[in-house]
Image (tube, rainbow, N blue to C red; front, top):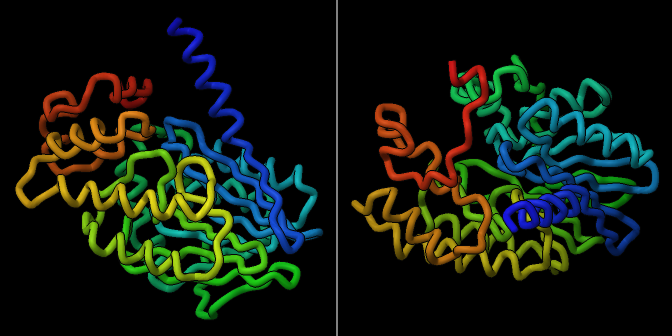
Length: 305
């Protein structure tokens, strides 16, 4: 039975990893969801008739190469790469993409440009023991974009500067002709969220309302989890509100994580509730801090030495 369950899960993840969506106005969207050990971030490819724009580029270089394969299969010319926020699982794999498509420009807001430039080394050192041979040694080169939107074959892609949510600085992208919203980690779909950087539910809920007002929305592409409609925003507002009711000042991380796992037992990504929660993890270890055994992956050979 356990083998059958694992097989079914594998099939579901494979189907989700290569999602393709048609949209109004002549655009198409393709989604690559990273593998589970890399926290399955989404990369969204927006396809015109001849050109394409990519939003977010995975964490590991091997995953970035799979995104590059997806772009090649599309037959379009990649003109532009956009980044929603400066977490490694959304931009470090872009080095592999740009090796294949060096003509593409990487456009970001000034705060993201600075964060990637100045925090890259700390992020690399923080995570390199887990994937020592699959991460870039230098940050992707980005250009600061100060306009309101870019165009893909006449279709507007609008920049939405978000209030602090999962991160202090983030950008969502709204495509009016397709009634589509690409949220990055503002929205997690059927997945637990990562609160460690900001942990301000009120601001996160406010950011969700800001994104909700971008315009008519038929399709939402989240940072993690399957795409859906505008109901994904409403569910995220409810989820963050639940977290707010549990994560009161002084409540321990283990208590918060267990309560959220109990409230949303069918959600993926429970490890996100535990990750990077202060010096206790480094000093005492995940098991000693209460992380359930089932959530703790086996260390890679380099990290086990």
